[in-house]
Image (tube, rainbow, N blue to C red):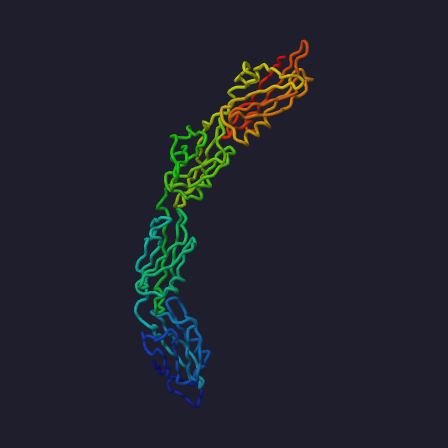
Length: 472
């Protein structure tokens, strides 16, 4: 564009009326620059004061003043933006104000030229998105994409991906359709349940020719498609049969020796939180296995103890497959039907047998020939013993002197298991009665947790006590 401006001088001798011509590139309104790196230029027919010229020159875009650098060459300059031009954006070259030429003429240009770079058509835009604003989705959406953005034209994948953000931040992957018009965002991990996610794509997103997105776009979605937390539907005893678990009772009232506990949830649960969130109190060690999406089986480390009330606890932190927690602790009490170990009979001879070892029974005992003072007791139990429990029984069963107090303690001479549930124990050192005195000895078998225990870990409920009355 060429502009002729009349100028005057204050000299009383010479009046210079020659116009100062200003030529710009672009030269006319709505021209289109051919490259994002093109310069604009201004040429004066008479060189101006450079600071004056730079002060009156600027380039504007819809977002404000564009920063750039001047390069002077005699009576004119070129100007280049710091960052490359954005295609499709309406720029304005403005040169307005007053300046002095070096020969003293005043220059008052009035230039305001709109122009474009590469194209003057509209900028790319976001045509649609899925899910729509405020939609509910699952934490594990199918087929995995949580957001699809559709653009009006092919986009620069790298620039567009860099302009996208999601809060709360998660790790995700990008993918595109073949035309580069649809962007798919797929999370690498499960989303958090009942959370609002906000997405944004800024104007840094660009078309293939570098044209920025016409405006930034934003939206949100919420992962509340599943809003019902899991709950425990049923707890019941099961046993292993081949590769499967078989019900053996309707509920925990049927828990017996050798049983595990099945915990059935209302929906598929996260196996990690579920197996780690089941325990039995008090102090019952065990392990849990996820055997089906809804089913967790708890197996005690040792068999259930008889007659001891227990509580199965399911933590409030157990989550379903979508990440929702139960929110409240589940507890169910039960007492295993495991029988106590019993001493069915104690015999000191063919005609001396009892099943009452409560501490109130006196059993006659004939001693062997002096001087050994030998007595053999045969005990019949209600359950078998293995090698380890037989050894422990020999250490726990004791015979001590009772009356009179000065009687020496007898010693175990030998022990013989006739079968896994029957043992004969022979003590020596028992004394025969003196004139007018009857000697008594006390048989003691400890019960409870630290007492006698069978091969299948059955316990005596209480201590067993029996008194032997010596017969000469």
